[in-house]
Length: 254
Figure 1 (cartoon, rainbow, N blue to C red):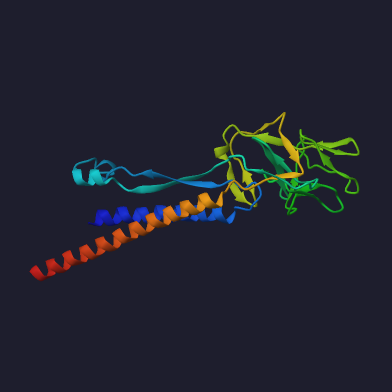
Figure 2 (spheres, rainbow, N blue to C red):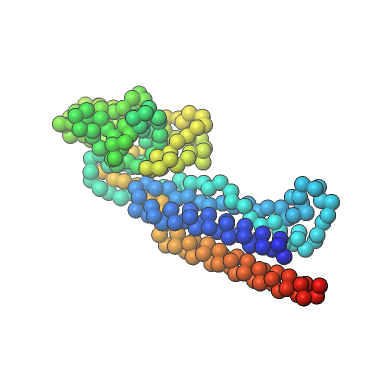
């Protein structure tokens, strides 16, 4: 009986986690270049197989019930989002793989697919739209232009002013994008091997990559997770009531 309560409780924990992941995806359906997260789970071995006692006791019924589920690390799905034309000179997106490289005021490097850039007043440095990070060029240094002149960005990431090259976007890619970790503000950090600079990135100026989160898909997943949570909650209630009756019957027979 208590084993059944445990299985139902772990099921509720798993579905609550999935609910939180889906809710975050839904909250970012309009976030530029957002990449949806996917909650994953793993099955726990039956009690007789996972027990530290070394299977001294084996119950076939428990083996058939399984050992419940555990939450596995969530991973990010880096599928290409739809491209939306904006005609804004400092809006850029990547078609295919790659990440823009940016650096914050503390000197920490991050990576992003969000190509909404802006020029810092006074300095002409290219920054993320919120101004929190500087956009890095192929040399690894912040890109700086003349703020009084028009800026154009070519398909290879070259930044030009009046026909003169002012820098090139530092676009990189990773052998294993699963190693990237979200840190907020559409930024990722990477603690593994250094990324490789892409020699021929597909950069589109005057356009942005839309969110990879589809509202209909997320809504369906949300309903499924909610129904699974409710089913486990009902099982907890049923088992609790049954356990209560058993205890009362035993008390009367003592």
